[in-house]
Image (cartoon, rainbow, N blue to C red):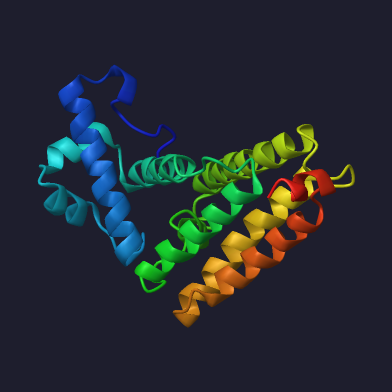
Length: 211
């Protein structure tokens, strides 16, 4: 297993080289989402991305290093969707976005990050660490929003942003898994609604009165 993620580090690449690398990673991410990590070969990535084998190996030492780049790619894409989590309205809108997006895919594939965890957490220790870091960042973004609500006096003093953020993230992951296997977004909607209703109960009267 390679100890370095890539041969050519992204920050040292030319704009053209960076674009080629990003295309390879994005292609691999989609193929691995559609067919699984085990079901995606470097040859599949090469053919779909329209690049030569030498280009793939210029940017990535082996499949393991490409997988780690895919993990980073998926985490960053997910984090880009986490705006507006510092209000009840924003949290409800995020809930609707997750449920609607999953429903549009007929619940296939589950969570783009969670699906990787299911395949890689035990087989590739480095990827488990990368994935744990990604989930930490996701949880931190949720916690920051809840903490902002606390700081503005919108949640009662007994509200614990750390525990609520963990519960909300667990609801997303567990709900998506059940939705995937049942091909029904209802479990995700139910799990999120239960946690969000709890947060609603923790709102101060002043915050509720501004609705």
